[in-house]
Length: 354
Image (cartoon, rainbow, N blue to C red; front, side):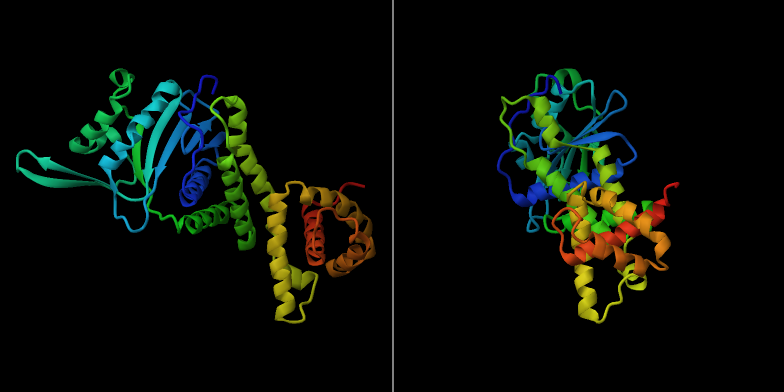
């Protein structure tokens, strides 16, 4: 990033498009979860991923969207906006570090041209899930190259294998649910004990983190290293979020009802169900909420375990004792659920050696 200079700062764009970019970032984070990476929102491009290993370690993504009323993206419109020329800017700025430069659209790209042999108009539709730009039909490729040739670096690099196109079949209204489903599948495979409420809270928190990174505003004269910090989200941050999820993910309404609280009626149960969702969201939003309270809860649990026979009895003793000591603003029901979660966590981690 030492010599990086953005063409422009974050401009005003439709909220739907920005939200969709955050969802696409979640997809790429899930795909890259086993790597050491940093996602950068709306700085190098709509999205960029810096991998911390290897030489060619940067992937950039330009994401173009059209509304549901449109059936395709016109190639001439992309060229009029110098989209392909702007993609070439990454070659100029990160020549030795770029692994791939990706154009993503949510609708196919169409191009109409006149066939000189048949002397009639023909239309080419580009709808590949992934294809290199230099593998596209000659009529499409020539138009793209014409736009890229405005760059002085084109003579040296040409239309290299680094440039790709991908169709992401998604709408500006469905992306949130689709990425939520992708996270659900990921967690079901990696953490099969994690319940749906936890995954919903996890998705909401990750999504909001990325939107916050994306919305950070800067001036072109700002220190880019400092801007980079505000615009980036690391694999370590994602792992920390997953750790929080695994800390609260085993607490379910079934466990609460069977071991701690007997629900008198459906309304009673619904209040606890809603509070559990709120608590899990708060634990994600406030990184230290669970651990700070756990430091208060854990020693008291260990002191009291030998004096009680059941989890329910342990809970009833401690809620009276710790009710006013728990930190952060929580409702009474949220405090009860936090204590229950603390009891479960102590039992899961095991007692410290006396």
